[in-house]
Image: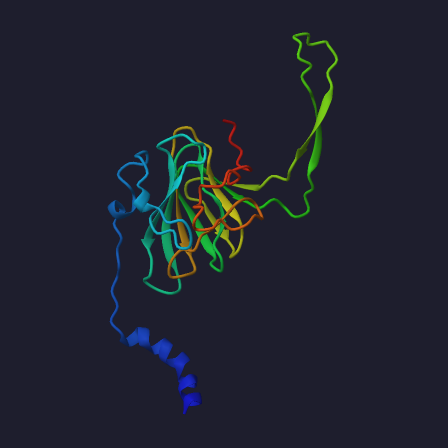
Length: 228
């Protein structure tokens, strides 16, 4: 009996969408995009892990009033996909993260942004010798050298308006806006009913726990190439 019912399940799952009533769902832009990107963060609007909901990430450059915003657009309408909007203000970036088992497609709706991914596995740290200051103003005076270890850098994928990018499941990545004036807006479609974002302390680092929040670790942006 149970074996026959189990055999019918795939057929039922294909037939139900044909016979069950369904309707189109529309999310208005006014419900997705905040009225201003530079208002003070609302603590009640931030979720720290799992599905981001309408989350606000505090700016990692420590400049007050700037934040990275993730807004749900179409979620929990089907178990196959969902869509959200990522808004990255000038000189800001997201946490380093991956999407768990979900694949993701990014559409660059406006602005110029950089999609970063993990440094390549075959890259090794590089030792660089740089002059050490001798404490004098004499430029001809001999200077000692010190060795600085340069760690492998993330792979950069520039995204202009109209570009697409595919992010496989479990792939570590980070969104970056190097512009001084223009917001970057990405539409993110994921293969699940609601977005999954796992925030990390660094490339290949540990997961940021819920009590920490995505912005608590001082290492979250150590690989972000801001010269400020």
